[in-house]
Amino acid sequence: MRARRHHPGKTNTRITANPRRSGLRPGALLGEILRDVCSGTSRALLFTLLCATLLIGLCLAEISTVSRVVNDADSYRRSGASILMFQAPGQIDATRCEALSALPNVNQAGAVRENPVGVKPTALPGHSIPQRDASEGFIRLITAAGSTPAAVSGAGVVISDQVAAALGRRGGDTIMTGAGTIPVRAVFPYPDDGRKPGLGYTVLSPVPLDRRAFDECWIEAWPQTEEVATQLRSTLLGEGDAQTRPQLSQLNSRRGQIFPGAEAFGGRLTIAAAPAGAFAGLVIGLVMVRIRRLELASARHSGVSPGAQTLILLGEALVPVAVAVLIALTATLVQTGLPGTLDPAALRGLAVRICVVFVPAVVLGVIAGALTTRERQLFRYFKTRA
Image (cartoon, rainbow, N blue to C red):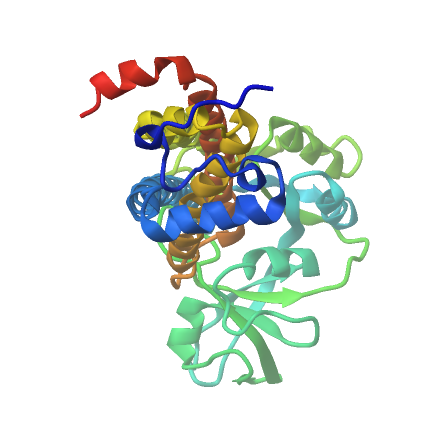
């Protein structure tokens, strides 16, 4: 076979016609990739900075936007807006009420009733603090967030923060009364933020689930569903009192009946972060090859096979991309690791998704660039070089 004429002026100093390098031997390909990266031929530093800046911007923008939605949802729940109150004095079966906690999306459920006895502390002579009997499920519901300390099963009452301030007591202390000493299991917050009055200044006494009827059944449902509210009627004893119509309401309606979380998440500006990252990756991969088309066409003219050249280009592209992904994920870990960040695992998952679509997009861009680089257009590339 007639040997191809050698053109010294058209042979790239990095990708040569050495048969061992133009083949698919892993060692030769790896050596070529390392030389091009270290020498700056592949512009690895430039593309590392470009990719890292792009990924950090997209990841942090997505995290910040979604984090605001998550914080709004947490604030909504903490305000008591996700708690439904089913009021039917003397008609609530506490056992059925607490059984609602087994329903999907129902996190807590419990019953409460008035106790006319009240608590008469010796520290406030002549004063009676309103008292209510509560099931253990109700205690867990009312102390789910912000109690000091977290309420645990056992003897003792749970008091509101206003009662705690008036008596100078906290969780673990005792209240002296004329009838004896009452231990305090926990203190629960009940701020004046739109919640219905009634528990702001009260003592909750845990009681077993007996045959006596309760007045109210509370549930905390999240995410919110309309089906849960319809199940509250199952807590009524018999058909209920025809003269007393049960009422269903929110503990706090100031924040709206339904939290628009799905709309806020689906309508966020950064919902296109992953597609934008994929498109940018495709363009970057294509540019990585196109800016070297004269060099690549010359190497092919010198005998380098298109397959080997494509593998080398992919290896050279993955170096800056891998470093950029590592930098972006590190920035993500720092951002989501700040105190007060809610659901950091989900936020990190959003950043990972952007990186996951970015990497194959760059690979496709490099392959597209390699496929559109033609040896026969060598002289046209030479004439149009910058």
